[in-house]
Image 1: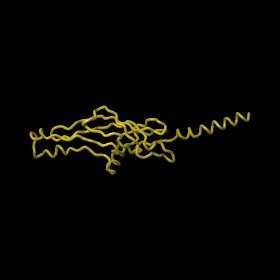
Image 2: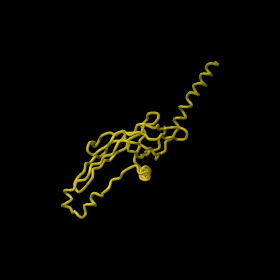
Image 3: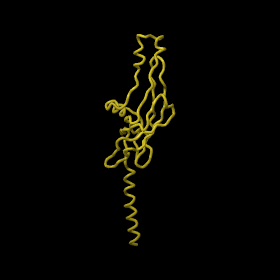
Image 4: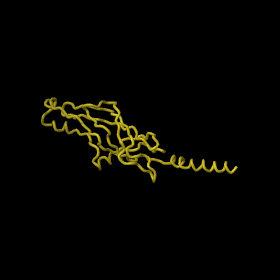
Length: 170
C-alpha cells in the first residue's frame, strides 16, 4: 500500500510541470522580431515561394520562454512583381504564416497594426512608395513609357517585427 501511495505522489509531481506549461497564454499582438534567412529579390523570387525567417530575441511570458531565439518562422511570397514602365519599382508582398514555439507548435503570426508601428519606429521595414509615378510629372505620360523602375532586393539578415495573430494557449 505504501508503494502505491508513493507512486501516486510521484506521478502527480511529474505531471505538475506539464500542467503548468499548458496554462501559458501568449496574448494576441505579442511582438516577435524576425530576420530573413535568405535574400529576397524581384529578379529571382516568384509568387508562392516559401520564405524562412528566424526569431531574433526569445519571447518570454512571465518567467517562461515560449519562443526560443533562433526559432523558425515561415512566410509565403504572396505577390512578386518586377519593375515596370512609368518608373514603377518592383514589389514583394509577404504573407506571414507562423513562428515555432518551444514545444514545436506553429503559432500564427501577422503583420498587424502593432507590428507596423514597431517597424516604423525602429526603422526596420521599408515601405512601398509611389515616388516613381510622382517623379514622372514633368515627363508626361508618353515619356513615362520609356522610364523603367527598379528591382527590389532585400538582403538576408533584414529584420522586421510581426505579431501573434490571436491569443494562443501553450
